[in-house]
Image (cartoon, rainbow, N blue to C red; front, side, top):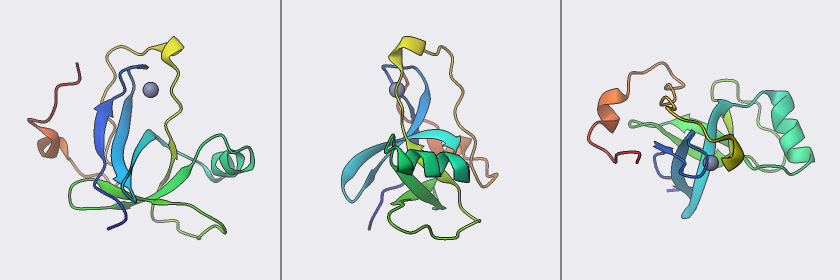
Length: 115
Ligand SMILES: [Zn+2]
């Protein structure tokens, strides 16, 4: 398995919701905002962040690193690695929506308390 199912957690330094999971066994944090094609090109060009194609799983999604030539995939969103900015700490962040319109609140019930 390339990736674990990602789960929404609050990033302690900046207070924002992020997605946390593992890709090839390595811990990965992703920002919740979907990248546009332009943003993804900029991220690659200036190597500001890694990008991942996400594919829905039963629980949430799994992430596949975007490497080399672009795959023309319009069905699945692309997310970028988390850009942490503790100087803009956010209070009262709301959990990210499901990218495929599913209601996953039950899935996360009983999981860790953010603070
Ligand atoms: Zn952060």
